[in-house]
Length: 88
View 1: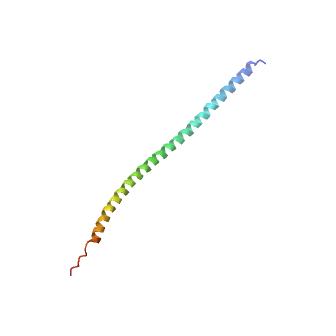
View 2: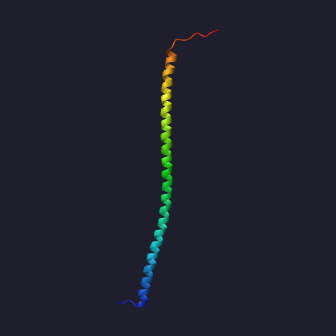
């Protein structure tokens, strides 16, 4: 079966329309991927900031524990020392 010139033009037009629709849908996905990537970047930044804050809090807690350990030794020495008689 031979295609007439009209059928060939119609087939070509449909082919171009299909390709155009395919490219248009890719552009839509590109926009969606860009939005998703942007949100992922924001989440990644928040996670990194939270990790830095947690590390800082951990260091502060370790320093506080060291100070408490030093104070515990002093408190024990004071409790073991003989009582002083109050003046007056």
